[in-house]
Length: 267
Image (tube, rainbow, N blue to C red; front, side, top):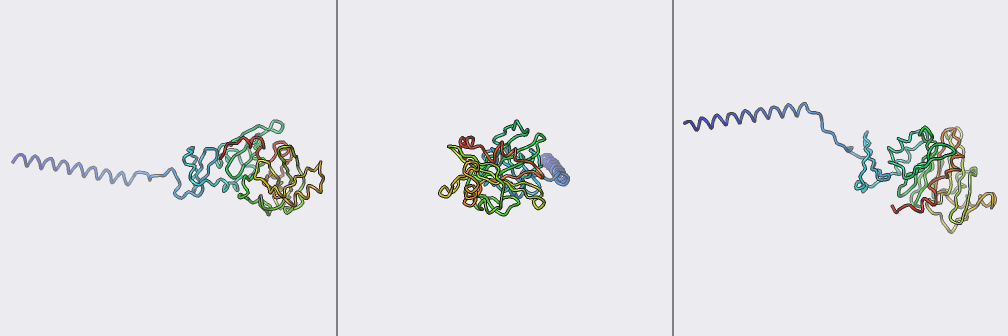
């Protein structure tokens, strides 16, 4: 019966090999590190900014450069509350991606950054040390009405006069556009910040039936006060603690330049 003995011998070898493989697999399953996923288990925010996708979930933050992933219901406006003066440029870019525009401010130093999103423009002025010295939000649609930080009111909703007696910063009108800005210093109650409000010509349009622009040095204070009583701002800006941002605001203005905005491609 040599053939039967040979078959039995082969079967024994196969059984031994299978047993060894099973033992090895069990040991590996016990000692191997746990698998990790490149995506958070429960993502809380999907944000696109200038071709970047940022995923925030739990303790994870992932930057993905894939336009195809931009279909995941981006909500960049949810991150506006994380913007503040004093934080670094890298922190801003970790939230919103790379700025669409990045221009120097020759006479003051630093740079003027503009981030473009379907519902708003985010402007961030960084110092030579690349820290945020001033930032602004300009709504691009009448539907997006964010709260103004540290003030009781919203863009495109609360009239300028209802924010209180603010100090005029600039008002200019050309044959193409009108722009206006005013400010209020908050003192100790507002951590010594200055808040700016105004009308940015690249932002959401006003109610043209009620919109009667007023330039202080041409039309006088009474006309400006009527303008304030009838119109809500479409932009706000936030200055640094004990900051002096008037020079910044007057030079770079609040929001995206009117002519630059005209050339933006469709969203």
